[in-house]
Image 1 (cartoon, rainbow, N blue to C red):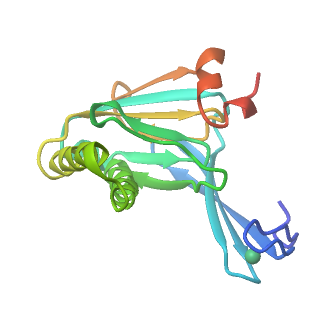
Image 2 (cartoon, rainbow, N blue to C red):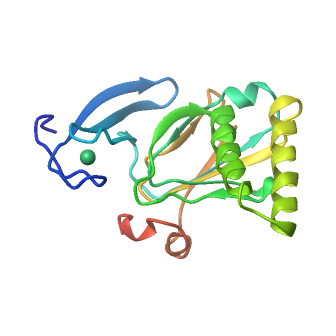
Length: 189
Ligand SMILES: [Zn+2]
């Protein structure tokens, strides 16, 4: 992509958004493209990540059951829905959701942040439920992880990376599953 070609900024609408892309090699996975867009006028920034090895709609599942598993590398693209069924937690991507390379612990941190933010305005049962969820997540991170990390990505740009092939279960999303997730309509038929 031509790095000098300015695009429209979603924050201030000026034609000042410039994107630069860098190819990056992830061990046990392959090449990914890191893309950083920045608006020269208002400073808006948007990052995303694109897997160069896969483009099929996928669901990834990994049982996280040790402290070491918290270090598993996770590539989460802007179109991925991330959930942890045991905690009842799901993060649905918004229109301008960012993509990034992190690890399982980093993903937990992002979910905690989102939950903490939501709890600021929650009341009653919703607040109680949220606090229980938050406690479970913190305990899992600090002492004994025992949960499933699920990532659904209609564009297949996400990955959970392990040197052990049994650690991550991967299968293609069906048409029916695609209809239920955000951005599923953009998946290749
Ligand atoms: Zn702008």
